[in-house]
Structure formats: structure tokens, C-alpha cells
Length: 244
Ligand code: URA
Image 1 (cartoon, rainbow, N blue to C red):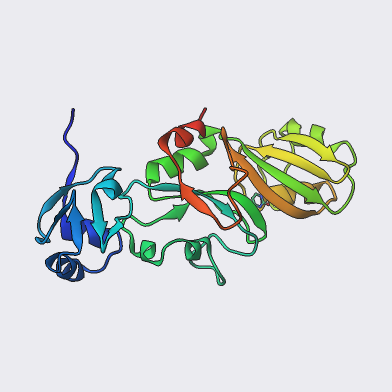
Image 2 (image 1 turned 90 degrees about the vertical axis):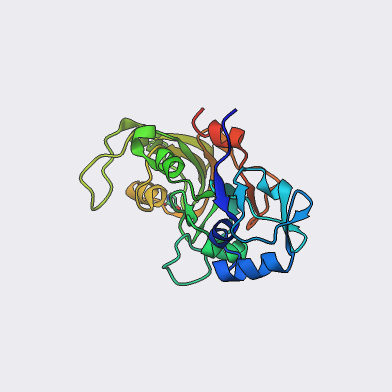
């Protein structure tokens, strides 16, 4: 069995957002950091960095946050943005405050508009992020759309044709699947992630999306019991399901 990577305690905890290295050293000296039942008072001590660290280490009696790589699944609520830069409340405001200081930092895997809800992945794992969003991966994303006007019955053929060019673009969209679920509602499965893609596809056929919710990324479905704004860590098997 290969040995786990080791890190200095102060560096590890500073990178998890617990404060500067000096602040972490003070916590250690005060006996607040406990590894497998024993206080770790030396901030320069080397500790194994494994996914189960929260089962081994506590800080002020509370399990330490999971180390990188970390991926979580959120049911993004309406009205919050996915970017640090846009004004307004962001999905990062729904996470523990300390996580803003994590290194490597967390990013959303692609973006959902402020007015779109549903399955959002957030990760500090760059290769995983790129694998999900790369057009070469062809990971399908399923959206549930409520529309302002009745469907005319011809949208499915056009979306599946691979010939639809969105306004302001030159390259046609890859074929997409439309599953009609009602006179003014449909699920749309796309494999690309162009700007406002679903809304613009319906706009291209003279309709307007009034509600948009992402239900699925690859083989991963948003759990029904995950309330808007709630999130949890994504287990490795669910991460693998995305590509299945
Ligand atoms: N397409 C959109 O129009 N908006 C989203 O948030 C995602 C896909």
C-alpha cells in the first residue's frame, strides 16, 4: 500500500481556511487540535493527508474539514449567482465562510444562471472540472423547462438536427434531445455548455423559458431530498456516475 501524502500541520490547516500559519500554531499550542485522540501541539508536525482526515482530527472538538480534492453537489436555489465577481448573493455564500480561504480554491463546474435552479457541482479538483465541462467529454446535461407559450411540435426535430445556429454565433449546436412533458413544458438534454444555451434555443423557436431547472449531469441525478440551497459532499462513486 502506498504511503499517504504528508503535510505540515500549519500549512495544511491554513490551506483549509483555519487562519494564518501563525494562528494555526496558536491553536495547536492551546491544545485545540487533536489527532487520533492526542493533542497536536507542534505546528510543524507532519500529518497524513487522507480523505478520512475528518474522522481522525478535530479542531475545537469539531471534525476538521475534508482536505482537497473536494467535490460537492448543491441544489442551487433561484436568485443566487455562480460567480465570485457578479454582484449579489452567490452559491459560495451557502458554504462555510472559512472555505473562501481554501487553497486550492473551490469553483463551480460550469455555471447556472441566476434564474436557473438545480444540480450544481462545486470542486477544487481541476482535472475533474475540465473533464466534466470539456465538449470532448460529451457529458449530457438534462434541464427541465417551463415555457411561456405552447410547443409547436417542430422543436424536437430542429434541436436534434445539429444545424441550429444561435443568434450571434457561427457554429451550429450539437444535436440535443427534446422530451416533451406537457403542452408548455419539456426536458432538454444538451452536451455543450454555451452561454444561456437552453434559453437561447427556445428563443430561437419563438418561445421563452419561464422556469429552468437542471436535473442531471451524465449519470448523476439531483437527489429529490436535497432542498434548494442544500449541499453535501459527492462520494467518489457518484462522481464516477457522471461519466457512466
Ligand atoms: N442554459 C441556460 O440558458 N441557462 C442555464 O443556467 C443553463 C443552461
